[in-house]
Length: 517
Ligand code: NAD
Image (cartoon, rainbow, N blue to C red; front, side):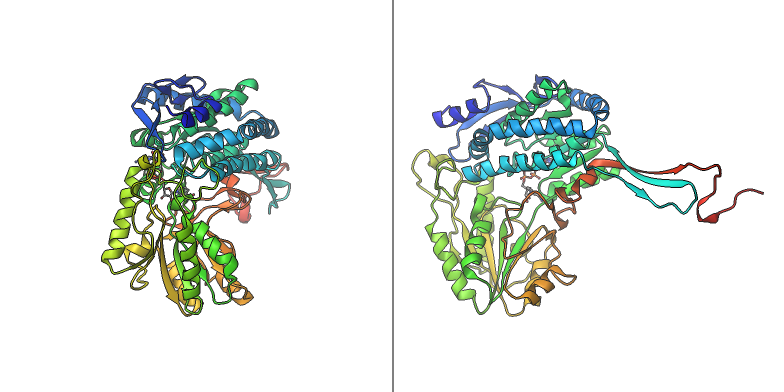
């Protein structure tokens, strides 16, 4: 193992063993298929992890259920206190974990650390929430009656997560699920097992100190087979799935067919719209970050750019200048803005998308190929050039506009009226994030109103990516309608009971119904 990698792994307590156990349910086990964690920057194999065998998965599910039965009786503020300790333990390892995210996923260090910060933030939020997960008292039409809406812990929540946020997505789910009194079982992406092992070790240490069963925050690493077995299991009350549209469609069907609860956070195809009165000093760098940040591998990455005709040439010129300034580098090095794609396969997807654009007559203004001949050790990495393309027309049903390519490819179209740009923004199947740049209040009113953006995130003078934890996060339409993190998202992680209580000496029926002769 390179020194670069071994220093980071040892700092987060991952031993340099030939095979690591990838299942935690109170103890660490693992005898299923081997997962390889490959560094996207260098191609180096970082570790081999033994995923969950079918038997180990069943054991983990059983232990999660037992853990839930115990944990649900712990008062919510007490759960909050343990969550506070988890928050502290994560904060103590923030930089080390951030470096691990950068090493294993490939995003630049400040984004890796930012992801851990997001977990810390949502933990803070959920600590507060643990004293505020209130139900309601509802006025009853019957004398001497009260109606309560009561939240109770839901059960076992399985979190299936994507490679691109190997820490934060679990954090959003765990924090709310934990405060709500559930047992959470995490099935991370098979290509980022080390992040999940490191995070689970930190959390399990806190649970142990507090005498809480480890399976309250369990882990089952594995690929498609493990994922399928988890979502099919009747032991899982809710599946929170973050990933692609194609897999999410399957997951939604499977969980629905057994009447489980499902929360879907799927792909995005996010547009930024630039009006003629926009402040370009702000808009150009924001589009640059939105399109190129995380090498185009955020669900909220800016993939479509709609420019008003009056500012289009100036905007493009300034954006191209930024694109031409970018250099690929080790994401762990300070100053690097462009890391690699996460896998070799993603390079193929990127090339396929660029080829299709060329074939359909698009103009490629920047980028358009992968990097060749990089110096060691980057020559083993998956580096591609951020690309700006201008397709021949904005035919919104065409694949180049309507599909999510999970790579830094930005398609540009030119419009004359805001209404046209909003129609293009809304004309795709996905509905995650969207961004309008204007100083005109009338445009803002249109954009956030009934005839405005139909996405779950509707920003003004803020780019498509980089959400805070306070608001509910998620998308509409084929993005799956799920909401996580802040806002009212916690209400999904509990079971609600409407309890009508009769304190009187009569037993009247509602609506004045009489049922006695
Ligand atoms: P993916 O769909 O390939 O995998 C996601 C998870 O599903 C992984 O844990 C995988 O092992 C598991 N899985 C695969 N097949 C399965 C099956 N048949 N049954 C059950 N589980 C299965 O996604 P990915 O490539 O890891 O992530 C990229 C995608 O995730 C992009 O589309 C991106 O937009 C999306 N994403 C969305 C959000 C959001 O909040 N909306 C956030 C991050 C990523």
